[in-house]
Every structure is written in structure tokens, then in C-alpha cells.
Image (cartoon, rainbow, N blue to C red; front, top):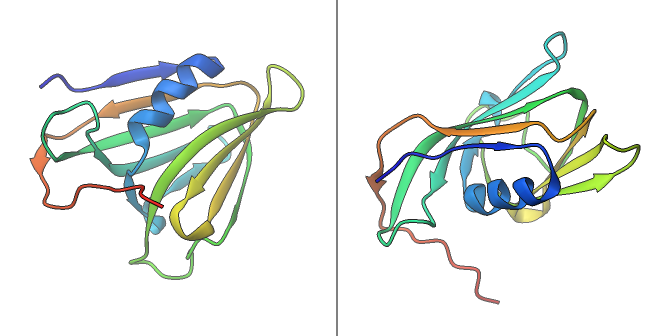
Length: 138
């Protein structure tokens, strides 16, 4: 199985990354916003929708050109809390800039103000099987 390394610089690229990270799980206290580098990084356990098997792989997700980050409904005060990614969308504000909205299971959101779409997703581990396959029924 080929590891993914994807770059997004426009909305069509963003759709590919959004589908790749759907159902990804991350520990909330391992999210890093570096204001001086203007970057936001996540380490997530990505469900490999592109595989015919039920696998997960460790992946790095990086947003560059980040001006500000806000969240709602994210357990930031609990170091062992996890969140599940449901979607990622771009709301254009002052093109090429805008707001990236990371939607989380349970109603949480992370809003990322960016100068432009500049996202990298890279698999950094080896696939491992999982017995839990995400389901989005009703």
C-alpha cells in the first residue's frame, strides 16, 4: 500500500484532503499552533478509506499561513481527550484567504484563519488493521 503525501493549494485539492482525513482521530492536546511559524499541526490516526481493508495509519496534517485558530466544543482542558474529524471546508473571506472549518464528531469545530489554502497531509507510519470501521448511517 502506498503512503499518501498530499498538498492542497485550492478548493479542489482541499476536497481530496478532506476525504482522506474523514474519520481521522487525534488527541486534542497534541495539536500545535505555532504563531511565529504561522502553522497548525495535527498528528492523527487516519482511517484509510482508499484501502479495501479496515486499516488506520498515523499521519501528519499541517496548515500553513495560519493567522488565528479558534475552537468550540473541543475538550482542550482534558489532556487525554480525543476528537474525530468529520469534514473540512473552506469559507472564502478575502481571497486567497479565508477560514478553514474542521468539523468534529459531537458538534465540535476548529476554525482556522488562513492567508491562503496551504495544507500538507503525509502518512508517517505503517498501516495497521482495525476492527472498528466508521459508519455514517443516519
